[in-house]
Length: 224
Image (cartoon, rainbow, N blue to C red):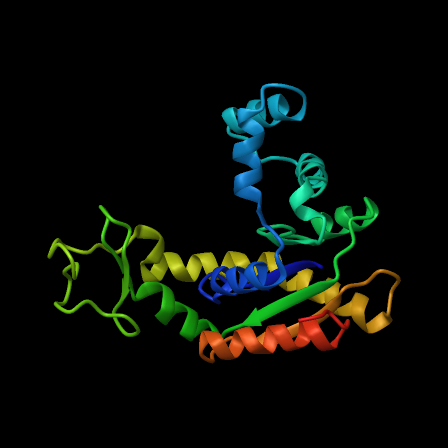
């Protein structure tokens, strides 16, 4: 099974990715992890990636595709994989298709913007341990204090409301066309087109999980 999860920051992709990879025994392939691994590789493509990153430039789509190709040839991908953070744009998605890296499912987790802002801007972190709280959904016992140490909690700059709104704006600009790309492929029944499904992500994580599992099972007969 080869699949892509789409969804805004805060939509719950990370949580659902964990459920999927555990159930179907496939790896979650992160572009960040691939880039870090490539930088540690001192030959071939790894050297190229290191030079690009150290110069402060964006890694070109062609290089990212090569990294994906190399990664999915590893033994843990024999039963499939879940792509995390790629593709982000239509040219990247089209590059996958042109390289015959076909995807079985595109699952789009949809959550409205105000709910996303509430989820992201309400997060608080205990820096020393990484423990995460939420003002509404998982508040600390004492406001602003870590439950274990009593030390102050912080709000990351990325979770401040103005920053969250900017992140969501960028995501929507990039991904709206990507969503349409996969929807149109599915509607036209193009050869090797993935099944596209949109899931409402407002429900409890277990409800969202079960809807995704149902799609993966019913639409292409994936065994439980």
